[in-house]
Image (cartoon, rainbow over all chains, first blue to last red):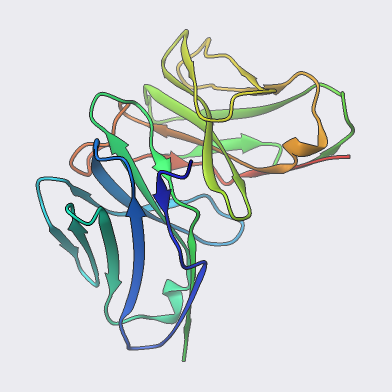
Length: 112
Length: 117
């Protein structure tokens, strides 16, 4: 049972435009959400996070939106750059647990 | 430099031959974890450890063992590897167990690509 889902395995965006990566979850106990970025031959690196008490968190070109009623979060990258080309994983954790549940990942390609 | 290291980075072995993948972190983190990444399945947690001598199963622990005798090391042991354990493995660590307010994110090692023939 996939508790965190990224339904788009890949996304292609032109440089300078907005990239929107989506993530859905099923467990209403999740209260903390993160995005990780992964380049080939490297481990994932933390990108941005959001607590369930917020609906938006912004860090430079990256903004994460959380819609609790829809159990949906999204990552916006504006403007997209070729260096953003990577696999993006969303992850979630629930109160009183010690685990992160990861989604299946979305491969973003930003072309010139 | 703060980092998580894994060895080996690549390993090809045969079914049934015991192997160990080492993981070490130099950040004095309490929490360490092992994940495997498979196409279409994302990252799945195998085992994790909240501190020395404290380990617990993740979502896919079958066929794996771990130990946490020292704070910095968290080896992953495959006693009798099988082809379905062919995967990309990541070790990760964080200061505490649970990510909170962006101050406790997990730091990942570079990965170990394991092939079991």
